[in-house]
Length: 229
Length: 385
Ligand SMILES: Nc1ncnc2c1ncn2[C@@H]1O[C@H](COP(=O)(O)OP(=O)(O)OP(=O)(O)O)[C@@H](O)[C@H]1O
Ligand SMILES: [Mg+2]
Figure 1 (cartoon, chains in turn purple, green):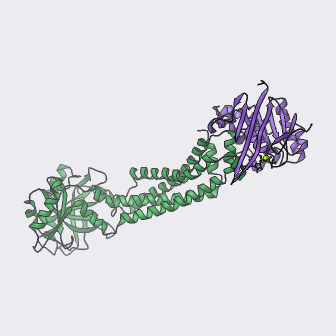
Figure 2 (cartoon, each protein chain N blue to C red; figure 1 turned 120 degrees about the vertical axis):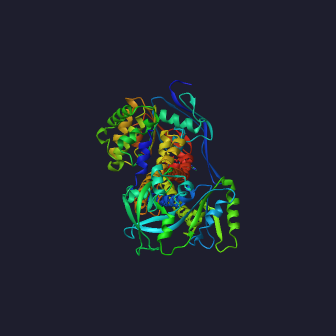
Figure 3 (cartoon, rainbow over the protein chains, first blue to last red; figure 1 turned 90 degrees about the horizontal axis):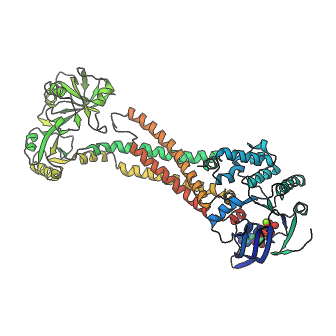
């Protein structure tokens, strides 16, 4: 396997059981994501984008097949090991920001660092840097309810990068934002990819958002279909 | 613990809810503290009773007297060690509001039979030789600021002095203290002989007998022997252990133990349901946030612990405030009712018991939502929100 491959999915199947019915979302999916890539995943609603992202992020496991990250299988890790793996390797960015409403921006960004054994001083330094990176170092004390959607998403990005993970997984990160704010967020993601070498996998419905990525994959009925960028 | 801030923020995020649940717990522990202290005060007499001490009283009613001759007769019964006797005087100091428990006792044997009480040797001698003398309990001496050498007028609303008044001038010869701080010293004792000679009804009798047995194993045998001895006489007796005697006295007030248990149980059960339900709702509202924390890499056991700590904190905040309030109330009440309930204290035992219940309350109310959070699947957690 190439040194450049970050994610390697081999023959991945995913089935959901709903009552008596069994829905197959993926059946023998193969894909690779290279280190340093910025991949956009597009596709109609229900095509399995979130499910795929969940399997990449280790919050969901395939029904069969292998998922490897950096040449290590993650599909067969225990829940506890997966939690640790996520904390060390993945930054998550959600459509609805998912900040803790009772914590201010600083405390929200600090959350992933509570899982490390950094001193509080070290943590504060890291949080300030992360907030500066997204241009919100003057909003550290603000509560999520006191910030616009765009600002909240920036806080979420700061939270995703504060522990310096290799990979960012974004599920419709601009789905709830206006065009201008969306562009700012996407520029930030692009910066993280280009300047900081973060590998990014982003699910989006928006073709103009996908333009910020290096590659776009189209998912339809659980399979990738070719469509030139 | 790094998660403490997060726990604290979760606990305090809804101020009104926090206040209301804390208040409910506050009330529960207020009731618990106050009532357990009250129960302790009522039971102290029973607990403090010496286990080889018997009380012999008139079978009809313990307010009926016994012939004086019984003293010597009881002394000769096998297994009896010391015998003493007493009469009720009632009594108040200067004005009826100042109730003072006063008994006329036998000066030579009283402090032998009640050996948990201590009187300095010289004071005891002085009192035994002074028929107008009185020995006062430490707590009474403090209450009325009596010193050895004082003459104190004690009045009775039952008895009349031969001099036409209802007052006896008594001279304080000594102050008795107790070896154990739970033993009551809130009463005074003076000469039985002097009392009998000076009160208008006269008579050659005693109120009741107090005696010790040579071995507490002989209690039943001795008490049966005494009661058989006086069976079919003009004054039949009923002999019981002091503990049983005190208990019977308390039970006249009603079955307090059961009532207390009922009240505390109902209060706790109600609070348990209310707080438990509130916790379940509070955590359910956070399903999405718990899914986020898990996604970030917080382990399930760690989140489980956070929720249990939160519910325990809630129980301890409300509980400690309630216990504190109970302490203040008991303190105030014990000063106001010192003469009726001498042992009214919220002691260490009650505090420890309450702390145990707080922990239990916290764990029980937190366990259901904590287990739910432990089991929450990230994917369905997000979809449910
Ligand atoms: N926990 C689940 N149980 C049963 N079916 C599920 C579950 N999660 C997802 N599905 C089904 O799997 C399919 C893919 O869902 P997924 O959320 O991955 O789609 P998506 O591409 O992200 O859609 P959208 O663009 O609307 O977010 C859908 O048909 C959905 O109903
Ligand atoms: Mg989706």
